[in-house]
Length: 364
Image (cartoon, rainbow, N blue to C red; front, side, top):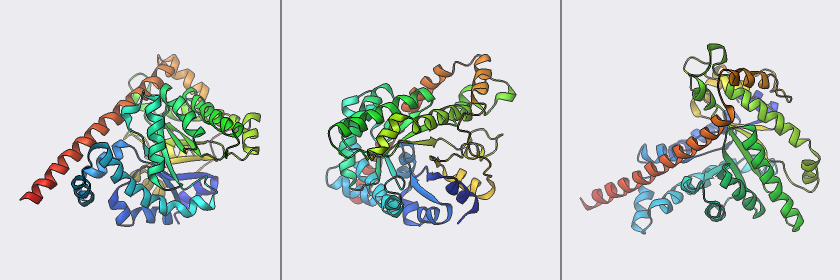
């Protein structure tokens, strides 16, 4: 087992891989990550699946079978994705069972086209959860204003949720509130309060968003400061009387997850965010390239401070330079949703092209 990734694991942080392809399932890459790098979960999104399905021939046989049975579009995609995620979920099942359902999860996102559709999101989340047929599959719902209500309703319905596209403390607290309301409603109805959830804060996208607005001394600092601010609120929430009451009733707290932890600035260390975000009771979902870099030369120092460290000073300095942090958070969430919708459209277009190509090859 790699010493560097084991240190994070021993610190109390879960490492999840931010990728899935059929090839990495077939060739044993994911199994090796579990055995060698302490990987205990997996996340996916439309961009990841767009690259996976369009990047080779691993899905061709199933695409042909689905097309011949009359399936297409989103229905075809979810059938492809479910096969991969079920296989990955089975690899993580021992971790899931050993941790009482806290760890060992894989994630599947609802259609990004539902970003402003609360009712549609609730319905599709329940449908995908049933379709998954595995206890350790999270359904991803964006933490947008429409998503907040869908998160509460889905938690109340017993659907485990990975809240995605969070960029600030305020956005995080809104979905944490939705999670707790959902659990409280279950308790009031006499239902099992143990419905797992994670809240995913995207970190590295902050710094490119303000790169041209701040001086050299402030480069690549805002994303970490935003994460520190959110972590402080997370620790306060974990210790609150309200959360302790839910825990006493049998609930597990919603866990904080760091997403987008690959370094985007080539001038910055490639392990910058992973090292800075080392914190107990959190998850870091990490791209393959960053995982390999951290395993090779990453360092684990003192864990993230529960009081936020110098985050408020860093944020105040950047705001003094003319950055409206609240505006950037809202814009990043909107742009993130638009990027996933673009990948979704490209994914469905690629499936149509691949179906036509395979049909033409059979006809020839």
